[in-house]
Length: 244
Image (cartoon, rainbow, N blue to C red; front, side, top):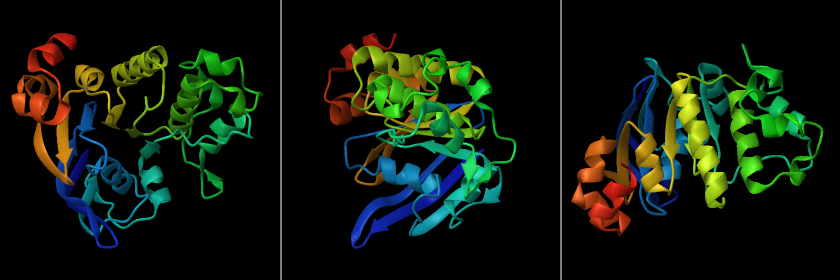
């Protein structure tokens, strides 16, 4: 489905992404993990068309996407839920959802209806006409995901979906991600909660200094002492037991 080759992203003289290659097959959850500043979000933003890569290629279902405007990515089925949620706090929950179905002022072709999406989000269905500022952090994250689903993506990009959430709210988000995958949605996720993310993911890529330094199945990454000791800072046995 997604094939990224030798992706490079520069911010002026700063090389944030230095030749990353990764792939995502339909139906998978693929995790991109690493320390803050490793280049994970820059990679995701390039895949979403939010930033233009300096070099490299992005193929989606065989179509070259590199350099297209962000609305073209949405049109093709790539939708990102951004870090920090980025909901419109002065708008109602319903208005936030409706914005997820728009692309440059017009509806996305084949978009979902709020009723379709809200089946997964009963806590939002009861608050449709309230301003989004009334929502808790966990509810706001659910709204951000629901808004992304309004465009009926075939590939959902999640950037730090549990950032700043309580453990209970974070667990609700991870359960939602598992449900979405079981319904056939393909997901590429950047997330700091490595333990919980690898428990969900099929495969993972570890990024350091803008480069991929490890990759493989989630099961094999958990067994790799280089990941556990070198990049996570926890004992190998402790991480392995926590995802069993």
